[in-house]
Picture 1 (cartoon, rainbow, N blue to C red):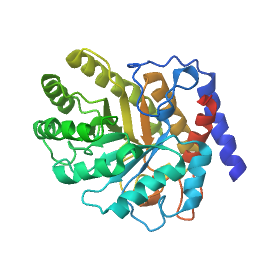
Picture 2: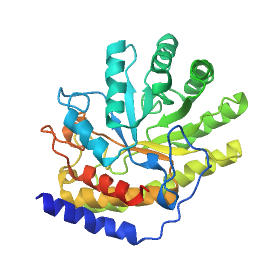
Picture 3: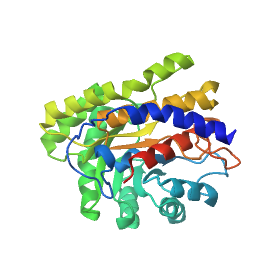
Picture 4: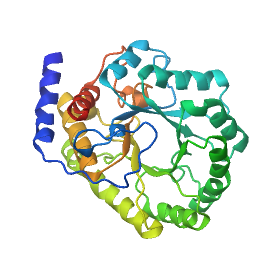
Length: 321
């Protein structure tokens, strides 16, 4: 089975390798720890997520999973720092990132608890130099005007605590251009600009396997729409990141996501179009937190790596100098 998995992975990646990639370079602004790899590809394109833990067997409790991610060279990990979590819980999350050897992209989960947000950024100090302000405010019923108000109020305070950190928003559940327009117009007026723009990408919802595979290219069009809106309002480019991505957001997702052939094709195609779109950072959802009842994890509940891990590992090998 292992040989078949690697064969399938290599077959689909050969299409990616044969393509002459001319990635779009959005701004020339590097995020903390970001490197430019072969063909102008950002090292941060190959990140993953440590989301909320839904099982005691997870990335934070299993050293073997941490070692596998480190061996593959995953350079970025996005982690949810739950509002009100004690310092021991925060320490476990940041320590997990450090054990993997990745750079930290922290999610500030509650944009209204200013005192805790300040404590979190102060506690992490230089161990985490990238933060998303909130998570999917559009999905969670936070109006764009309210999110903007909190951004303008809180982010300047956090920047004073951690001057070297970069703050990213609005972390939308999709390429929601209407929401993004309100945010960008507001920060252009306040001059409290984000250091990067982020949104999430789950292109398939109750689609057939064939229909889902066809949607792997949609990330390029969505990124272009976001980039054009940023340019039109701010008059400049900003790094664009997809901080959650996978094939389907359902809980659980369709069963074809567990097949080697589908996941090989979808993951390699998705990464190909991310490269072509010039995305600066991206985080697969997720590493091992029992997301989607485990069907979105890169490792199963016995610690065995699944197809998506092998594909990303091979693409890292392809582009890393």
